[in-house]
Amino acid sequence: MRLLSWNVQGLGNPWMVRHLRELVKENKPSIVFLMETRLHDTKTHGIRRCFLDFNFLVVNPVRKAGRLMLCWKKNLNVQITSFSNHHISFSVAEDSGREWRGSGIYGWPANHDKYQTWMLLRSLKNLSTLPWVCFGDFNEVLYSFEKVGTRGYNMRELEALAASCEYCDLYDSGSKGINMTWSNGRRGSSNVQKRLDRFLATLDWCNIRLFFLTYFASQNH
Image 1 (cartoon, rainbow, N blue to C red):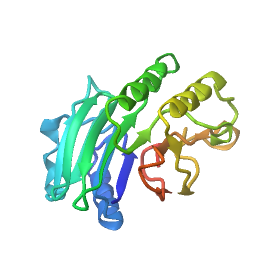
Image 2: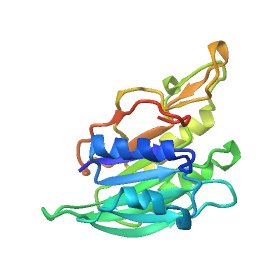
Image 3: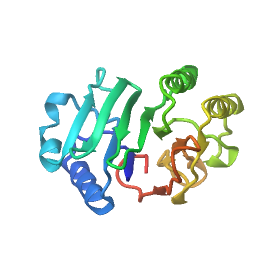
Image 4: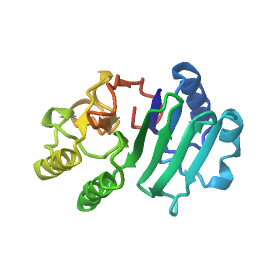
């Protein structure tokens, strides 16, 4: 089972749609979670035509911001359990009889709102005892070495994410490939990079092999 997560920061550009199609063709994911699509459900016909063997759930954007899209292969037994502007949760029943659940997360970006991401994680924990994987753009680093640049990190927010992971029995999967998943796009001493995207899972989910893919167009990898 392969999962693909990407903060696309806009899917209105045909080049982004083409790149998404290439990513899916190359990596062959069964489930795809997209953030900041900035597309209303009525504007996703072009994407749906590119992925005829996928089902879709679209969380419509608010004004010009966001939001989310979950795509899964039609041969998968997937049930959507809850969704909002910042998450899509689902359960999967595999042909082998194994069941698990997943939550695609798009964390609140503003510092004064980030506590809502931690509250969301804690509330989702209590909904099921199935093995659980959370993935997406959490808009916060988990460790101090996950931020490189001139500005310091917010220790309180870092500790809040770590405490929520501990409460939810979620463990960071680590990664191969590119370590930082976000850049402010500036050069030289003004450049700031962070690892905002990650996969977190309970120990009973499975061993995750996580690869960060090559930077393209958006500020997220």
